[in-house]
Length: 90
Image 1 (spheres, rainbow, N blue to C red):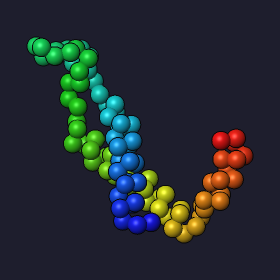
Image 2: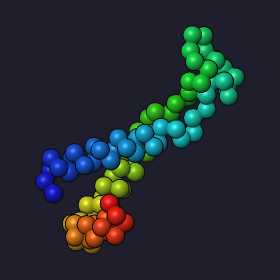
Image 3: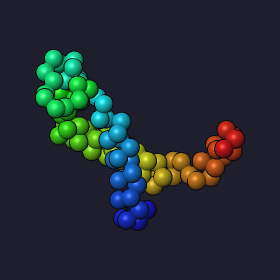
Image 4: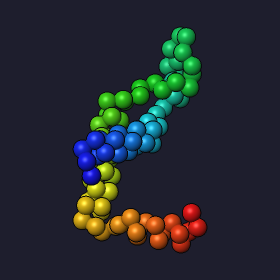
């Protein structure tokens, strides 16, 4: 896998993981009882974005590393994936 391809794949994985991680531990302003004037009551009270970005980076690195290792050491090949997709009718 070339460097630009690896960067592109990692970036896609990172964004998908980010959208999966964003809802973790979110409590709305209504739930906490501190609705700031002029904001939506459903807005997060404390979004913890820094922690979520760190978790996103770690999880994306683990997913990318696992996928890279599977393809690099030929534990899963494109022929295996083709056979799997044919078996499920895709």
